[in-house]
Figure 1 (tube, helix red, strand yellow):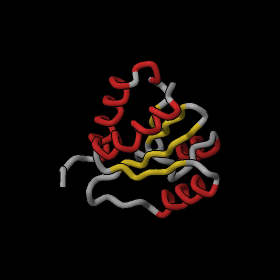
Figure 2 (cartoon, one colour; figure 1 turned 90 degrees about the vertical axis):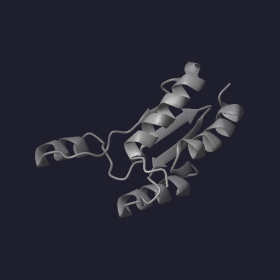
Figure 3 (cartoon, one colour; figure 1 turned 180 degrees about the vertical axis):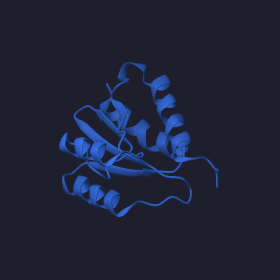
Figure 4 (tube, one colour; figure 1 turned 135 degrees about the horizontal axis):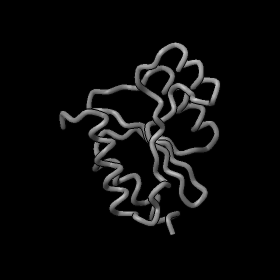
Length: 117
């Protein structure tokens, strides 16, 4: 166990990506889908396209979209996240659950080598 929060793991992954692939900054981005909001804010966000369960990060490079869900060592997906994963995989998108920066690198580097020209 690394004892890191999801936010910390995500920060480490994003910083590593931005330093490693400077020309592709913006191709990896966060989807700020969580947090506490009022009922009115929730309705507005839903009406403008926010979708519960969307993965934490999306990597879009070379015409390929990869969904990356960040979890701690003991974290697990919600039912809405599992539905989103199924929807993405049913539509031929890549979907990974990431629990460390090392896992992130193992998944992202081959994608970038293949599509990140």
